[in-house]
Length: 134
Image (cartoon, rainbow, N blue to C red; front, side, top):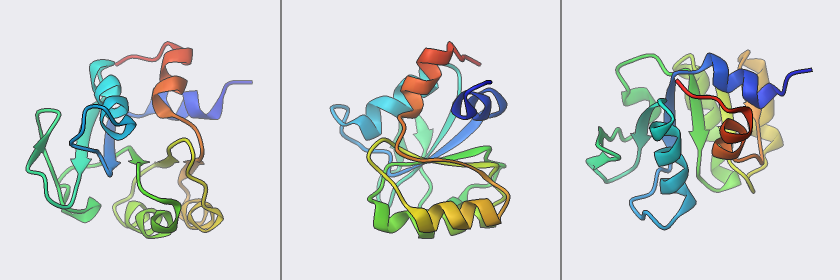
């Protein structure tokens, strides 16, 4: 049986990253950079930056003017339900909470909206183990 995370990544091309960091030393920067290097389109969502990873930054998921396949979350678990609601509102196909982030409420919101859902897993590790590139 195929890994659900791998299946989500195989189907995704555009990943909106909520909480992409300006600091290259943080996983919230290096992980999206690794996904970008593997050929995924990364759309940063950050409250104040203008450009990250060479891409225009948006203040919220609702501000992104193109379809998003997957929303990757680098924010504390208490913020995950609100992100899940925003992801559902823009029609994202999947919601991915990074390693260390767990939210039963975000899971319920995502599943009710028909989104695939992953929590507490590193998207870059799943990508690397599956050998997934675009």
